[in-house]
Length: 114
Length: 112
Image 1: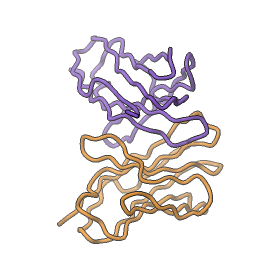
Image 2 (image 1 turned 90 degrees about the horizontal axis):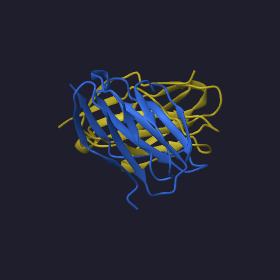
Image 3 (image 1 turned 90 degrees about the vertical axis):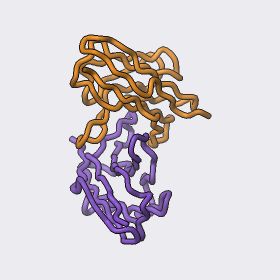
C-alpha cells in the first residue's frame, strides 16, 4: 500500500538558518509528489509539485525540493528561513492514473526562533 | 474565480445530530474529494467523486455520506454525529489530467 512518512514531527530552527524537511514515500511506480504548507487556522497552500523531468523542483516562497528515486525521498529545503515560515508542512503523493486521491504524511511542524 | 468554497467555517454539534458540510467549486473540475485532518495523522480521504453522479469511498468513510448531483457541488453529510468526528474537514477539487488538488478553507467541526 502507498504510504508517506515524515520522520520529523516537530522541527525548530533559528531565523536565517537553512531548513530541510524529510519525506519518504512508498509506491512502486513514479509518483506525483507534493508539498503543502498550512499556517495556523488556515487551509492548505501548495508549495511545489513534482510530476516528471528535472528532479530539483522550485516552489513558492523560496522553497525547493529534490526527488530522489533511489531513496524514495522528496525532501523540502529552504536556504534561509524567515519567521513567517513557521507552519505545518505536509508531504503528499498521488498515483498516476489515480482518481485524484492524495496520501498525506503526518505533517511536520516548523517553529522558527528569532 | 472563488475556487473551492466551504460552509460553514465552524460548527458545534451534539452527539446524534445530523448536518451537511457544503463544498462548491467554480473551476469546472471533475474530481472532488473530502478529507479530514486530525492532529498527528495528516489528512485522510473520506469520500471522493470523479464526476456528477459518481462517488466512492476513501480511507475513512464510516459515518459519512456524499452525493454529487452537479459538477459544482459535493456536500458531505453526517447522519448521526459522534465525538470521534470532531475534526477539521477539507474539500478539494482537481481537473482531469491535472494531479494538483485545490483545497477549500476548511470547516472546523466539534461534536460534544
